[in-house]
Image (cartoon, rainbow, N blue to C red; front, top):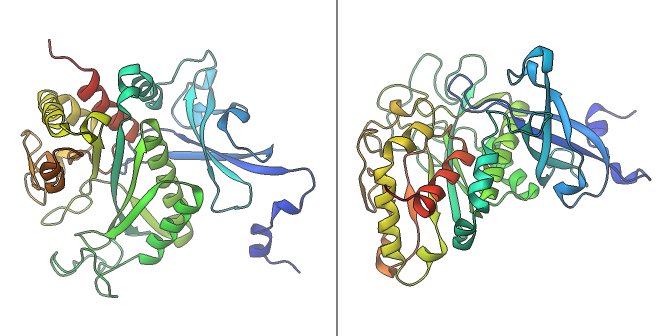
Length: 363
């Protein structure tokens, strides 16, 4: 007799009518208890294989149940925007990243992808082929006590120092979840480029990129969704809170590495310096959009610059913007915006960086 596991792992390629499962994913709201993640999804059967989101039908959901529409006019429309292989169902089954619209075709307020797509489709931005590499830090929590895994319940481990990029049962907690996520993202087609243990025990990081334009946001959101699903199976809780533990512990960020075509070419270092100057002039606007609770993280300690201060430097991890030694030496390359919180919306952050550095002109 088939077990539940056997049934879950059924290979649908044995079916003769090319049916596959498409899991439609959307963002319900940005802030959920500081975690910064409220991804929802539901599945439907479609005829496969699917190679482009344009082959998929629009769908809808009850927006009154996610706080995105009133009960008397509750329908919200899902527009498929990007597809990925489904690492959970496998085969030809897919994950579908969507954004959300009213029945009249207007983006709803939580649809931050819409404005980012407009920025990235601007001819001046498209010509610069903006690259992003996003370093997503996160914390794994024990399910019932909201305390980092590996920490004694109600107590603290030894001080920071031995945990960053560490190995060992007393220093690295949750590696099975982290490795499962890494491989699942590679399988899905997310451009994940690496992982590492972070400074605070129970905290980890994955990197996505280099990704061009709007795809950076799509890939981060799908990578977050996959991580949510894996932590669900593992019985631990994913937190994107930028300062999950008070006191002398590192916070969690989403450092955003960025370059344009002009920055990557000879003479690019001067372009980089001008872009950083623009970012400094719009510091307050960027901080306001870079994540909830970020003031708890950006204190000027624990490898951050103070939230009210904008400064940049070469190889300076206490700066708002860090420029790498290689970039300075070669006279071209990229820079790192260290201000975004771990719970930032990647559509907002990537779009805003491109808008400020390429399109914005000071009055």
